Image (cartoon, rainbow, N blue to C red; front, side, top):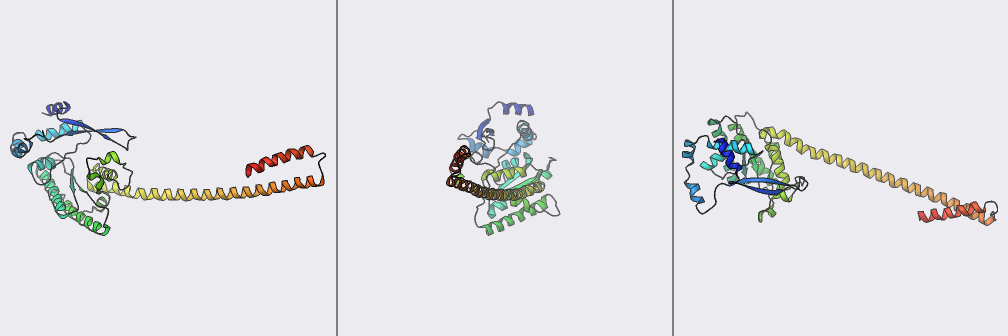
Length: 316
């Protein structure tokens, strides 16, 4: 079955390739393959609602695992989008397929309670199944407004407390502190991307502080770690690094300004000294002309006068 699935995926009948611009990679584009959830025609809704997933899984218990293996063999990363709520299809996406489970929620109680419930039950279902793989849970707070700082901090702290309790319960941890993770990982709300089908990764660089691209990049860094708790050390080092870099940049700027000030002072001193030098020489020439000393030094004085005029013109 594994080989049949690989051949079907390579055939191109089920996968659609989409080219996405990447401003972080010298303007080069990236390719993303999309495997749709079915044939989107008029009969699609009835096929989804009428499909008996329990019966299918009973007849073909290894089919979904084989599909996951076939996808993993062909791609570096596979993202599976699950519908919300507790459904048979949702269980396939949250329990049977994933190596890591990302639970996306928004800053309201209903979404938070649903996320903690679905995430906790998925981890517990994996533990009770024959699948020996652990299921790391990654909460992802999204649509966070950049306003009402005090209220925002209070709400995020409450969301963190909820997930810390879930982690203690499902992973049997004596204690759990997710402060560094919730401080670093969140997706801001950008109203401009609510219009049309804009892709933030095509519009923004990951170095743009506060951008969607930067926020998703921080989450991708966390997701590459084994679990949320392991990711906190990496995230903390990334939070400290910008402060150190800013301090180094400020010190370099201070030194550059000091060097600029010293250069300006030196130039002023040189200009002043040059002015006194040429003023003295000009006075000597005038004195020589006044007393009529033009005989032996006539040629030298004329040459010196021309040189003096050129220097005065150049420094004017």
